[in-house]
Image (cartoon, rainbow, N blue to C red; front, side):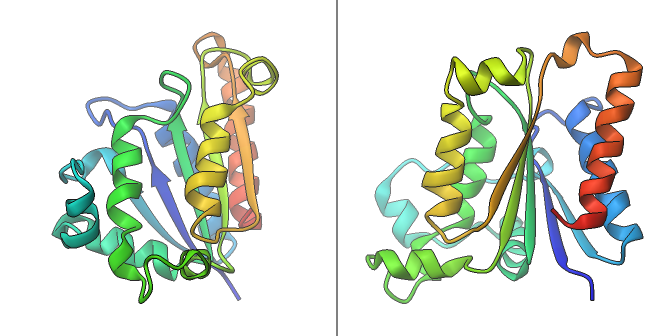
Length: 194
């Protein structure tokens, strides 16, 4: 039986095609070919406000434009998050998306840490990041702090597990053959729902 998969394309620029979109498309192609149910969300195409206060985070409702994405994420067996590395971490719009989607109003006891940990329990995740530097430099020299923040402080906090990651480095210099290899890798991961 197939899994319910949500693919979050976290590139904020919708004006032109990007590698993130191609990688997301390859994952979707593999997942659908294997019989998985796939929902794709282009975060950059959604209109929603960024949160500016603790009161808004706690008391305001989820924006109408994000409710379908929120429902899909909450019902998913596996979530794939793709984004370009900007200033060492995810683009602000993607962070804003997570702040709007994972709200205290989803919990009966929002101050209970275990309630948060149960929200996405049983849901796995894959984070895919593209970057200009080599991936091993990001992991070793920069200690992948942006990736670790997403893994531990957002996804891990709400109960995702296991959380896996894939880094594609030196993207501007990558040949067509290299990019084709990346797309095949993503298609394979999609078939395996990993």
